[in-house]
Image (cartoon, rainbow over all chains, first blue to last red):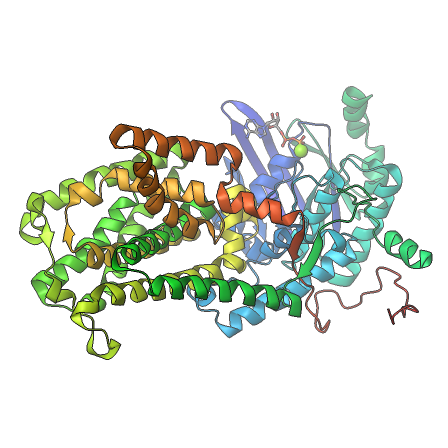
Length: 252
Length: 384
Ligand SMILES: Nc1ncnc2c1ncn2[C@@H]1O[C@H](COP(=O)(O)OP(=O)(O)O)[C@@H](O)[C@H]1O
Ligand SMILES: [Mg+2]
């Protein structure tokens, strides 16, 4: 269970986050909505230790995440995707996916150098997982293609594969439907639900497609100006006057 | 026939057609298949033939080849951290020099056999690499280049200061008899140069295989990831600090190996001669012109930095030869910005492409079932 409470973050005087708090329960898909600049990505960056909050706590299960080094976060079961893609463009789609498994089966330098059998065996298993995931996400025929030059939507799927291969218990998705058409958005919603059924994880989903959020989320948190302004079931949040005002005020 | 074509095109949902649909794309060869093994075997035979031919050359030519192989090892080391992890080092001449002086001092003052000093030289360079790797954690790009430049500039100075050990400005001469090939090798003292040729080749092959194992494996993928996007690498669980420090240490050790061999090759060491920053820049030139981030590049680089000046000085003496050398280098980088190996690779990729093969056996995968794409159960046209 992810617990964010009272998190505040400033950038040289600008308050990006101001007392943000919410909880993501086990096996729950929690939507995180709010106008651009509300601080959704900043929260992701605090959870994954890219930003250090000025105050507040973030815990996952019994772990105080604010004491975990950045590269250990995924080892605690938290994997993420990035709003504006953070792939390795010169590597192939397959390689991008394989590196995602670094935390579950960390390759040693010496063992790799001498071609240690256990390391090779682990690599085979990771490769198999990667192909399975690419297959499942419909991009297996691009496995040997460099990430550079592929369409945005495809790359978002590569990021999803890279996150999933670490067998996360909590998946952080930052606008996974960005750049998709309407029917593709529906498909993606089904895909996420299907993956949760098969793999079992909870998710924190930042998304602007309200239809998708309302359909697949068990629980929705709304933010505006770095604060949580509503928290409840999708229906409750949709009708919340503060949320309606926030959306009418900025997006209408 | 037409149904077969329809079926294959329908099976590519993501509509990828980079090379016009009318023309045939490159021949795709999957790793681990018989065809792939055949190509590897042909390359190995060609390489073995070249090496064997080198073994029959006259002393001078063979010596040049030994020197090229030594530089190839040094550049392989540089490629490991500068190429793959992107930690630009201008001062790798310090590792070359430290390896050379370790061997020189141990042989001359401590009565060690030349061969036994190789692991020591590598270990000492490994430790220096760890130390230099530490600033690489905080700085990168040109700033790191300046730190390594300082290392490269400081090295000859330090050697001059430690005169008791290193002979200072006078240099350190290893008498030929001290470089006698070991009994078991079957080479006599008179065949020292041939022994060194074969020793260097063995070291080159070992370094090549070990580094290739790392680079093609998951550790190598993580190194590439660190170079291209550190935040994403860390989010995937890659410990950036470990990868950077150890890549630098391994890089130093391999370049130190080259230094150790260089001491045996050259016999007399002058820090102001062979191990100035100019040597570090020569290694970088070899890397860039040979082809960064390729396995073949450093070998081509070693050949270039040894043989190209030799040929350009044939065409004209002194200043003119240096200018000619520079012009050839610029021309190569202009035609192939990713070096000779990179350019060659791009040309070959138009005809043949080597791709990863999907491992067989689908048990115990991440996803229990695989009912995702409705592939036809059996291919009716299986017998082609
Ligand atoms: N690295 C940064 N430096 C300065 N300001 C930042 C940085 N990251 C985010 N911000 C600011 O924090 C606020 C929240 O941004 P963000 O978290 O990206 O919002 P959202 O993802 O909800 O659109 C914005 O005002 C943004 O300009
Ligand atoms: Mg955002």
